[in-house]
Image (cartoon, rainbow, N blue to C red; front, side, top):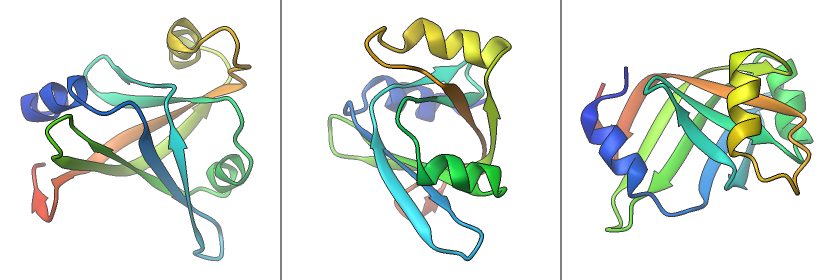
Length: 123
C-alpha cells in the first residue's frame, strides 16, 4: 500500500512525470510520460505507447523510478522493480485510462519499494 501522503500528492501531481530505467550496461534512460495511473493504491502503471529504450531496459531486467512534482512544487520519487503486461488486470486497467488515440502496446508496472520526497525517505 502507498502511504497516504503519496496518494494525496499523486492526486495533486503535475501532468507529466519522469520515468527512468537503466540498460544492461548501466546507462540510464529517462522519459516524460503522461499516460500513467495509480493501480489499487499499490503500483504505478505506465502505458507503453511509444517505448523503445525503455522496453529494451525492461526486457533486460531493469529497476525503475518515477519522479513527479505536485502542483505546490514538492517532488516525490518512487523506486522499485518493474513488470510488463500485454494481458491481464494491469493491461486492462491501462487500456481503461490510456487515450484511444494511443496504441497502448503494454502496461509497465512499477512495484514501489522505496519512496522519497527530496532526500527524505517516506517508506
